[in-house]
Image 1 (tube, rainbow, N blue to C red):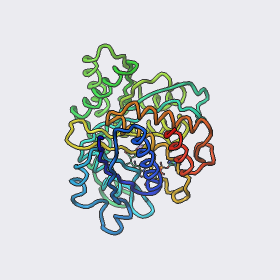
Image 2: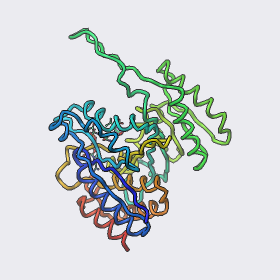
Image 3: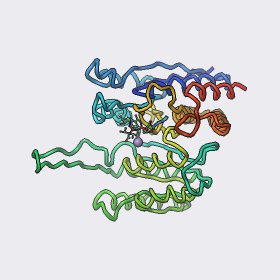
Image 4: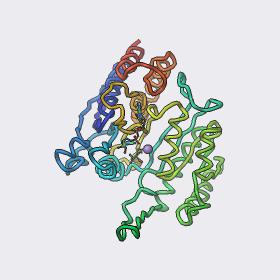
Length: 351
Ligand code: NAD
Ligand code: IPM
Ligand code: MN
């Protein structure tokens, strides 16, 4: 029996509803497999924790997490109580950076049983590789002057190592999939980082002559995600562009509440972290209607990461069958609760 030790951070808002649901599903999946079991250690780090302790996690929080094979996180943020840049940089972004989770993989595909808002809901199956450790998200900059003359300066940082690393990862994935990679650029308007991005992309491409590439400006790319998502295989994007594209990816599948993500540490020194694309949804927290699919699909990505690909695929097939039969939450056009969707997934898994 293989024991998988996972640190769990439900976080804020609906994270506290969908994480327990996904853990139940993971336990059921482990039973179905027969050869694995999970140990989940839960940590209450969140905006509640911040109100009590003045920080989002304890000083030795990262050392605690380091002992686990993976981190499973819900969502962070409760902007009515703690400013988002404080809560996110104090927990989610802190873990991503300190644990060198430099790649964020975010799939989007035609999902059975969901009504997509696309005019022509063709089959599509794409994977966004989001650079996850630098780019437009930086703490370099400042605010000058006050009043009418106030200026905010926000710097972006693109290193050759970080850019190349994300691109190589994306080229490798494209090679294993349908052999096409799209790069999200904006070198027509942004004069330093994006021409550099394009240059690195061309350089790395030389090592992957068998992969076909396209470079598309992010504005047009955002539109193409809506008008012809089926042309994309793997898409590599900077931190911010990848963030925005993957909410579009979620939306074209049928809703923000279903998309998963994996924050991958490549050097094996730290655990990877699994969290859905969506946030803490304060507007629906406590109603019991949060869609658990994003968190459950994220659990599937964690199973993949541990090497249980068949089990992961089986889990996703079960989730799709439940959606296909109309057992779905309100955000995707149904009337089922979080509990009902979760119970049905577990029931079908056990069959
Ligand atoms: P959000 O994703 O939380 O919500 C956007 C909309 O989608 C809301 O109407 C919400 O009800 C709905 N929604 C999201 N997930 C859903 C689900 N599983 N089921 C049903 N409906 C769902 O985005 P936001 O409103 O911009 O952010 C709210 C908070 O979450 C903020 O503090 C934000 O910073 C934070 N956030 C955290 C993460 C993360 O931890 N990974 C990601 C995004 C946003
Ligand atoms: C995400 C989120 C975060 C991000 C926010 C909450 C900082 O939107 O994981 O997609 O932008 O990385
Ligand atoms: Mn986002």
